[in-house]
Length: 403
Image (cartoon, rainbow, N blue to C red; front, side, top):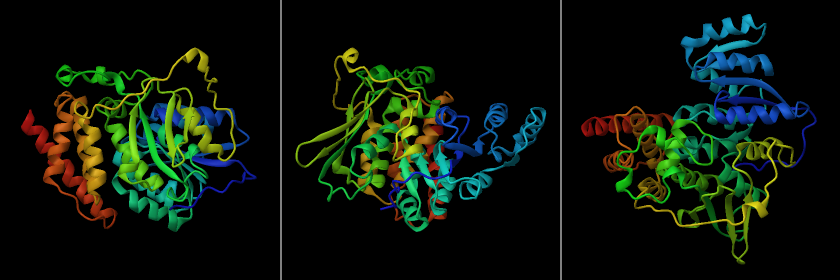
């Protein structure tokens, strides 16, 4: 198990590297940070290619270092910063982001880069012993065992900020104990069911990207919104929970909870069940992770249970939403099946968003790639990267043959 966060408040403000600063998680993090300037300062802001938005954030939060993954936008960022009188270092490229995550300009890393692209920087933060606020579930799905090893060797601390895993963290004694010794029977991840909850498989044949991205409760990016619509997001979270909390597949369940007010639950051997509730607002989980073990204002209103009236739960429909069943299959198979699953899903979702693959084809492509690339033992990161590329090539071929 990785080192547990030590419950002591630092004398100096925490210095943050926010990776994925222009995305929804980055924006929510900075909203919390702005409410507590005495507790937090921004050392590094990194984004993909949105130089205009990143420059505006730099003008407001004054980091030491700003990084764009897309090197072609570096000069545009420099120009914008000069015009606004902002004096900070500017770098570009994914290696620069990984170096910053493990460097001296931060002691806390918010890992919110979407997809496999976030793996190197997440591992760099873990190896460097940082407090890692993990929002990049794909890093765990691809390389969970290697990430846990890096945390142990680096002596860092990991606090999940996905709302479901953060809820489990809050409901476990000490955050991340040995579950068998803590008397834990089950972890229950809640799922909103996405925009198509209750729909039949036949009714999903002509779904458009805009329909799939119209989540009823959460404001998210397009890729994760599609994952929510297919229930793959929940499947990835099941795999993530296995690595983060050491729970076997049979001890991780999913329950659909359309209101998205109960974020997850832990069931104990004595029949007790603890749940974490709150509005569907990522600032709650981020504020908890930033200030742990203390509690600070997140800017989120109190939950009025009387006005809510009732909380509804139902079992997920894995026949219609097959991606969740595929994720459980991958977890039970082990090895590098998570890497193959994640790569195939990223390619299939991108094709759906581009209009070249139907919504129901996402699960079909993933299943075919998993069949063609049976799991192998996890050896090291270069091997996983090679398998990731192989899975992407296989997915491209599967998509092309369907068109």
